[in-house]
Image (cartoon, rainbow, N blue to C red; front, top):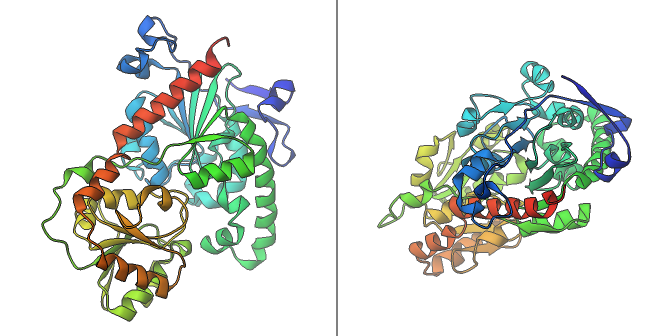
Length: 425
């Protein structure tokens, strides 16, 4: 069944305007959920949060930008599914078999999936994604939780539903990182004018769709500030979750002699800075990850640098736990990597901007450096070496960000949003 949605008073109120002048949208049919039939399933009952049946029967849908790899945003979605395991997961496109535990989820894609099977790169479909996300039909759901760093927050929810958005960041490459986007995705010069025009249209759409969200959750204070500055909206901060497996490994009696870095091998992560310093000081350095910069970084790497490529999840806790320190030279909105290292009892040497400021305690669980230069990073390494930092203390700090805590905070925020927005609707 296809339902046409037109603009009107309600559409304006919820920010329903077309992308690049698109005046109407078609929605992909969803499914109805189950209404509350017991006092312990009533959102007004204070015992509801203690009742697991409430979460399994809540009329809730999850929405994601796209599902092509299992990265930081997908870790958060996995935790959402721990709370609401029966919730369908709507997204623009998905690469099944490549998204870890999310492969077991009820993933529902849009019509854009057919084109994605041909091009195999979601980045080139970005211009089409606003229309695709608006095609999703959430009829029958009274609660929508989106995980958004791009288009998911723009989903159109029923007028009697509440929309909570876990925002990883407002679309940085549309608002603040346009040149970085063109560089990271190697947009050829002859296409850049077209891409910049598309990003301008995307900014307009992104700003308008902030009205469709009832409650914003930010993954860091930096993201919270950006939500306020760009969208003019308040938000609650809930840092990303650390999986239990990083706490389970016993802390080693002694550490290895290597420094560790992990993440996608793209320019803004600044792995080139780490390699330059490792070459200069003959520091053992292990880098985990794949990406478009891999060939370049391998050409820069000296004899003390190992690029390990893809590493199985089961091997990561051991790599963290035995490292002398994690090196985190990039500016990230949040970043789960420093938390995983600290959960493993490993100190962090981080660039002193972004989400790291929320999760690393300078002088206690790691140290900061203030410039992305070899000199500043080298000084921070020497400073860490002069400190006595207890691994158990580092792990205890990370426990405040553990996955069960994350789930508790998310569930509480969703419940409060339901009480505020669904009562009387």
